[in-house]
Amino acid sequence: MNAVSLFFTGRKLVGVLVLAIMLLLVCEISAVAGEAVGGSDGALPNVVVLYADDMGYGDLSAQNRESKIPTPNLDRLATQGMRFTDAHSSSGICTPSRYALLTGRYHWRKFHDIVQAFGPPVLDDELTLAELLRRRGYHTACIGKWHLGWNWDDILRSGAVPQPLPGGRGRLYAPGDFDWSRPVSGGPLSHGFDEYFGDDVPNFPPYAWFENDRVITEPTEPLTITPETAEGAWEARPGPMVKGWDFYGVIPRLTERATEWIAGRRGREEPFFLYVPFNSPHAPIVPADEFRERSEAGGYGDFMVQTDDKVGRILAALEEHGFADNTLVIFTSDNGPERYAYERARRFGHRSSGPLRGLKRDLYEGGHRVPMIVRWPGVVPEGSVSDALISQIDLMATIARAVGSELPAGQAGDSLDFLDVWRGGAGEAAGKAAVAGIGPRRSLVHNTFARAFAIRHDRWLLVLAKSGAHSQVPAWFDEANGYVRHDQPGELFDLSVDLAQRHNLYAEHPGVVRELTELFGEIRDRPVAERP
Image 1: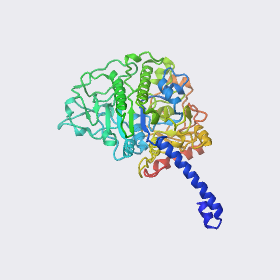
Image 2: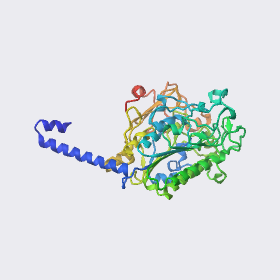
Image 3: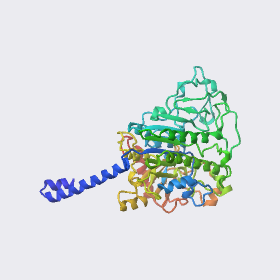
Image 4: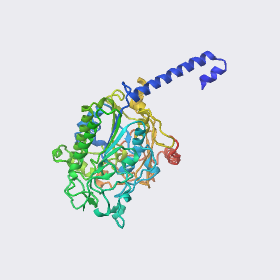
């Protein structure tokens, strides 16, 4: 605007020079965008999202020097791309985080809890990442844990009367209550995926394989088996089961199916989007025999080794079939580790949350600060580490720009574009700044349940509740780590010097508390249609 003003006030030469510089900058930006969108040969990149279930920040050995779990495939992936040290899921539990990742929208604008057993879909008319990419010409598939709900009434037989499970944990049906031969709407095929294969939720009924929009083998009996798990509780809820269902065989079958699917894309012209939401290392903790005693962190550690192996097999399939060089791969987790992590720390000296406080469900960092690795050969610098604050809600806007697609008005309203950070920044100086932690996001809202929120802004983290803990913390753990009770109505931490969140500064900085409380209100009340 200054250049135009100068031009029309008679200083034409200065105006022309400024406009020329602006034109050169636009051309440079366009060239950068073109390179990021199309790569060297102009082809759109394939997109693969690998989404672990209940994997903690400290379970990735590349960012936890004291880890007792080897993760060589994930460590190698990190050396081939960018590892984020300040990445977050939207929630401390799985359904809300999956919703947020696929929509670019905070889950708490709509709901908080997980989809319970035989629960309805949480997705309505929100644009999903799969729908965005399919509009761009992508073939899309989901292989793994869906856990975003289905319209089970589509196949419910007349007269079926379910029994409520204790604690509002869903509904209990008999195998004969459903016509399993019929399709079920509301799942992946209703929200942008061309194909689906998985078991929906590993510890929820029906215990059966899904192919696209239906169960492919009829569950004929109620769940009765409760084999011993390698660690923790069984956690499988009662309900219909396929005869002979093998919980230990789920991960091997999903891994096999994912690699087969990649092989089947060879020779196809259209790019693909493969979303692989793992059901591990979530309970029940059931590592296959070949992975037993492969870690020094007990059964969970072995299950995590198997999860890492699954990543390696999928990456190897991309390489084998010629896709690795033009595929954007993103690995992350839906939330922090389950409560068994406390006993694991005591028995084996392995901290699944690493240096962080808290676990799954918590507002503390360990509940939602998760591993995140981005690999895109020729675009994302190899071996780079970014301290930029990033959320999984930001994947939507970033991938949209990466593939040259615009987000429709009113969609992905909380998502920010991180492509320049992924690229290491536009230019050497900007690249150094991005890696040092400067990105487009300065604020982020944390939430698991409706009763409590937290707000992050730059180095400050304000817990808008008496405590950031939802899960019960053993007294020995608090004592061993210097956590003490306080009498304040909330908690304020300076994460730049207190990543472990030991020192509550709520009383010492009332101005910061007031400013962050107001900021939370502004973000909470912002219309969904407005971009941040």
